[in-house]
Length: 432
Image (tube, rainbow, N blue to C red; front, side, top):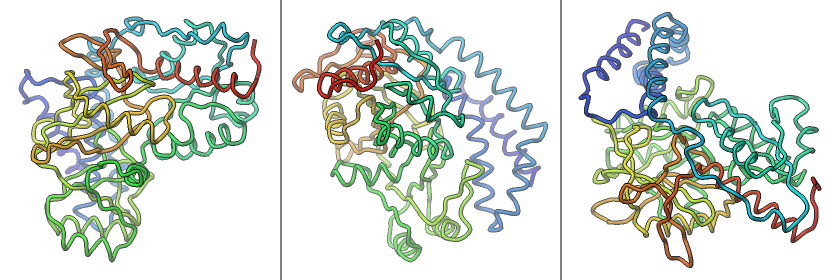
């Protein structure tokens, strides 16, 4: 087993070496390589042996093998080189200033949680905004046992949570207390963390509001799932509940492959790329839209809209995680759809909506939504080669030039909401 997994990884690296040098290999493309290798290993274990628990020990040996360690160092070196050329300096962006201060003598105190995601970290951008606006802040270690006492010192808690299931469970628990009990304003809010990195919760939420989402089948019944895969058309897309960068997303080509997924999910559970998490007692199948050539991500913060197109890599149907990004004008039809989602869900800071368009139906269909996304540049939209954003004024979308870190814009929206609540309800925690 170890030899087979090792050979899979060697073939993967060799494939990358043989690809045309003219293909666009971005930073995100490289950072997903390790996860793709892990996905290959999990896929092999799930497909080739029903006694997956026994074979998972071989995977653990593989993870700690010298070959794996050398491979990680190799990819880290390449990632560092790409970061040096493709990652924007934090000071390349326009500064964001809050215009509410001066109308009141108080400023909100901010508890800032450091996320440890390297160049994807949000906290340096949040900190730049806080410094430029002379807002009092301290770093809050949300993992310590005294987090509750420390949180009481602040009016706003800013926490870019990681996307793994363990962190999400911790964040939901703590943000509920912060927001619902202690009356703090949080990034993300409890409503936002409830659907972040939870594809099933997202589907239920969007479906309940009658938004156009890609046709999906989600069930916790094995009997119903077996009937579905007997009657449906193939190929299908199978997803796990929590996954980013297209991880946990696979193409199911026939009934035989679908039945394996159903049997494993409603048995001991399917291995996922989270080593401690299994797909257990649920299936999530989604229509495969074959005539969609790209997916479109639109990001909205207040009345400012950003976005870009993502293309699938060669021999892959998944655009998310490919790292192949095209920044062009966005149709107003897509902007209006995202506007409606923001208003209906009541998101306060930021929401990103991923969608695709079938050439036959000529209609945008939502794939999923997100509270946080990977950001390495202050140019999240370009029109005619110029960076900027669409400004929504009375449902008219006007392009405005400029480079902005969307983290700063999102935090500015939250600070504005704090001032709004102070004017409406009086003082919360007065911090002169």
